[in-house]
Length: 300
Image (cartoon, rainbow, N blue to C red; front, side, top):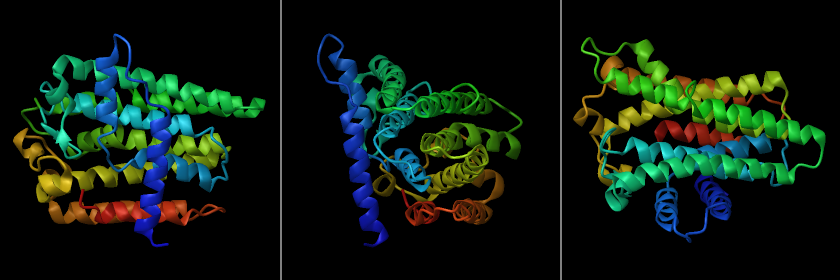
């Protein structure tokens, strides 16, 4: 089976798992739940839950214990996009080829949908405890929850988003160091969360988890640089959202600081190093390595 067929099969598997954990659209809170489900069912690459699952498998993890975390991390990622698209942030009208949540449900309901997804993510992740049978498995889940929370919070994604907003008002312009901080925390942190959680739940050793964190850092930075590249070169048809939103919002990106040619080279070198780390483990996951390589040439 070629990579594209494998990817399609694995995306379908991830979609099935996410679907199992979505809230029912009923009760007086039905509208916010509909907005939550609209947001998360809009599609997307499902990269983070897939990275989590494949890392879990690489360390010989088995069973369903990872599945609540897979659904949870997609909820956290989706909530960040819902809030990112709001008029007070990037004010985008399209996401994943569809109207954004605030356009369909209104700004207030979109805020609540994001809040709902974040809170429900932790409710969902906690369900992993129902699959634990041994004391060690309970400890792994607690450790995974700690990483999951930290990487999404003020020392992770929220911290990166904060720096990103403040950078917009900097008259002197953003430095490369500030931009890398934003990319590390706003984008790479959730990829680190996904892969580290997969490793932790599977019982990886501390030194192995540290190597995964470094590989995931590279993947996250490369992914975001590629996103900056695509914002210049892409289109609504290929991206599912309007290209040029960074320029429209006068945002400093890796491309504006380093130039297109260097940005392309850096995506390649970061990705190569990430794959080298992944290939150094005793149990290799060739699909995971190919998935990281594919990020270099993705067009959306």
